[in-house]
Length: 426
Image (cartoon, rainbow, N blue to C red):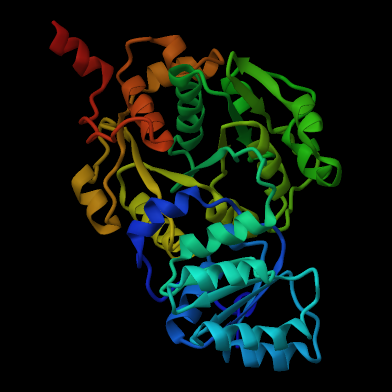
């Protein structure tokens, strides 16, 4: 028996079935809090179910995998209650399979759903199973996306609105500009696509989103986190500050009147509520490493790691990216943005040398320009509002296109400062 909650969250085969991960897996919605028990006859099917249980979309589900098939299930449930979902693998042909299921019906609770994984592609058998009350019949070999899509259909309302995408921004080191990039990319998405964006500043003691957008809300993310038991769409909407036509802010209090020690799932209710009402949820994650930041990053739909080109950033970025790859074996690797390039008198690692050990190419290269970025921050404006022709705006747009999938990602242009750009124009 394999208990998912007792096993390590990593996979022995990171990157396995990446084709399925990058396409079909992105369409799979998170599975609600249910109990699932599987009884398998082959190691191949057991391994697929185990790998699916480790996926971030199954984080709320409690999954156990047993070996033995239908007869093992009958013996087990003769003295134990059945879970929300029973998954059974069987090599029996049609007649024998239907006979075996009759014995299961005597010990299975009426409210439990049953999915059969068979080895016979037989449409007549499929119809007989559905008529007899089986929820679904899948033919082995199965893919994780197929199995999780079936579970989603069985336990989620068919008319449920699609969830918005969560985009997590985090710095490889403090002071690398991750928050600035998160804020400007959220602005770009709202302007480029006229799509609603909710920006959540998760750095409760030191968040800067309220300053960068010139906002001073009386309430924000602190009220949402500490009132998670009564959080709904209406309550969340009252906590938002409007920054632009399609951009809302869930601001951090940025005060030190208390300490902020959170449990691993502290922000889950806030993020899930935001996703139900907003197509894009941008998460400004502080540069700390604890249970809740690891949970937020592990469960995000996409991650952007911002780094500057020095050795400490390279080490931290590699540790962070490798850890997130192991925690998210069925998702795309985190994205990389190199920021503050070309700082005078600072030795730098080239973009190519920085990306090589990470095995990830940066999606944007942004030059060091303290004048423009400092002026924007001091005035509570985005870069596009401060200098509409600034070179970094194209980088922010490129990140926006990449994260939303609206356009083919392009190779980032070499970062140039505005001073060099002026000389070229002359």
